[in-house]
Amino acid sequence: MRVAALLAAVCAFACAGCGHHRGPAPGQTTLGMVTDVGGLGDRSFNDSAYRGLLRAKSELGAYVQVLQSRSAADYQPNLIALTNLHYGMVYAIGFLMGLDLDSVAKQNPTQQYAIIDAVVDDPNVVSITFREQDGSFLAGALAAMVSKTHHIGFLGGQDIPLIRKFEAGYIAGAREVDPSIRVDVKYAGSFDDVAAGQELSDLLYDGGADIIYAAAGKAGLGTADAVKAREGCYMIGVDSDQDSLVPGKVLTSMVKKVDVAVFDVAKALHDGHPMHGHVIFGLKDGAIGLTDFKYTKAAIGPANLARLKTIEAAIVNGKITPPDSREALASFKPVAL
Image (cartoon, rainbow, N blue to C red):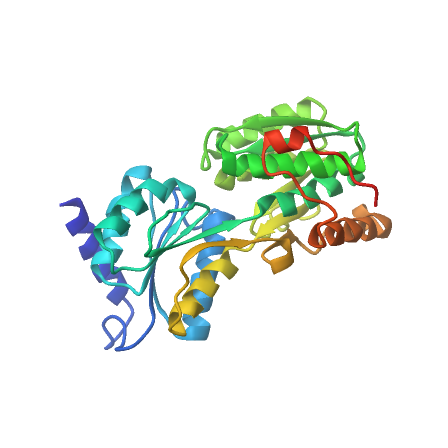
């Protein structure tokens, strides 16, 4: 009954505002997307994926549909609902959908799927992951350059291997610039608990950190709330460009261009050469990096910006290999540049 109700809702929504055109045209590329629990409007991960879908609609003429997940219980029904509509590609946005997608993909071997931030080893699934440690290394280096207290913080969502890539890269980047810097780490235990994000951010700031990197999805909006009234403090955003959340108080954002990956998968499908297997995007692919410091360039200063470019080049050419785990971080040594 749950799947049937969802399917009816999708059909009704898909046709709304279509005028005389009900559903996709013959031969039109069709794309369905299931969001993670943060949903659209998180100003982060899900919104970035959605931008890729909208780009496919604009540039490829694709017919698109999104189902939002309010809880993990919605993942499988949402995936099944879009599968039953026979979309050319169904996207699962977020590693939390890995097990549900594996189950659905095995039951529907002719349907093509894509998942972000997880590897699902089925022949009809393209798995997209990123080298988040690359951009996080740059974020940590910048934080160490700007920090006045030589003490910075990291706020993660869930304490899992994926977010530890952000943590490890950030700490290593900070140590590249200031080997003695202190980095405090806290986890919200959630990607959508804004109140917990603010409470933990307040604890980090109160403990002496003057910059916090929030790799916590929607919970990271709590860091934006916490930093507003704190003189001399900054935050670093994640996934999408969050610099305008609190202009001048967001030092930069570590942009993970999920939209680029979503669009590339759609274009390959549109061109008749769908992707397969595991595809990894990183700094040298232009899919990871920092924003252009629209509001903070003066506070950072030209010398630090130049130094950051040198560090970025060292990552791209392989002179620096940012660690992707706490174990790799333990053996990381700053590189003489």
